[in-house]
Every structure is written in structure tokens, then in C-alpha cells.
Length: 136
Image 1 (tube, rainbow, N blue to C red):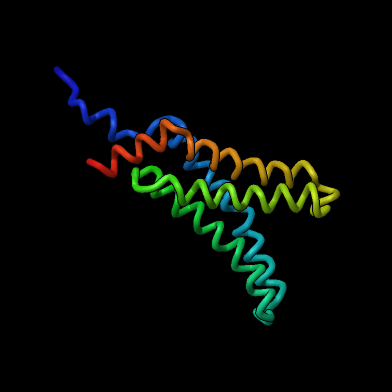
Image 2: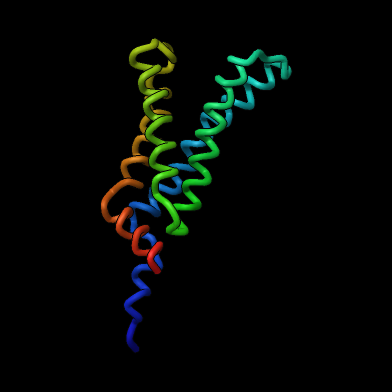
């Protein structure tokens, strides 16, 4: 029995399959931060405080939506950009801004997960697979 030539293009490559759950795991930290900060504030926030809460929420949603789009072969950019921005914010804030002085390992782990997601989602094999899926 022969396998159709398009069957290989339907399944995501391994880096995309690994990037999707990493993206969902990466979305937990900023999503949890949003919920905790909103709970402690009681909803009484100024304009800048809302912005500081909406950025992690947007990155969290970008990672989850991007993971779904990646596995469907629609887009690799959403998860790659969200992961890269989140990694830069966490790692930059940890290394340069002194965030998480007592929990450096936890902060670095939270920054390395979205960085790995961004790298895996932007590999040439994944980009080529997404491009082939968009043409099909």
C-alpha cells in the first residue's frame, strides 16, 4: 500500500510538536502573574498599572493561540514572537533589573522556556512546513 506524498506534510515536524507544549507551559507564568496581581489590586488600577498587567496577559494569550496556529500549520510567527518577547522581558528583567534576586533559578527557567519555544518555532524546517501547509 502506498502512502500519498502529501501525508508527510500534514503532520507537524518534531520541533513544532515540542514547541507547542513549551508555549503552553510558558504561558502559565505570565497568566498566573496577571491573575495574582489583579486579585491583590481588587480591580483598582491606574492606566499604567493596567498596561503592566495587559502585557503579560497578551503574551500569555499569544503563546496559547500561537501554539494552536503552529500545530494547525497556519503560522509560526505568533508563537515565536510571543515567546521571544516574553523571554527577553523575563531574562532582561532578571539579569539587568534585579528581578527575582532570591529565586534566580526559577526566573531563569521561566525565561528559558519561552526562549526555547521561539527558537524551535522559527527553525527552517518548521517555517518550511508552515509555508507548505499554507500553499496546500
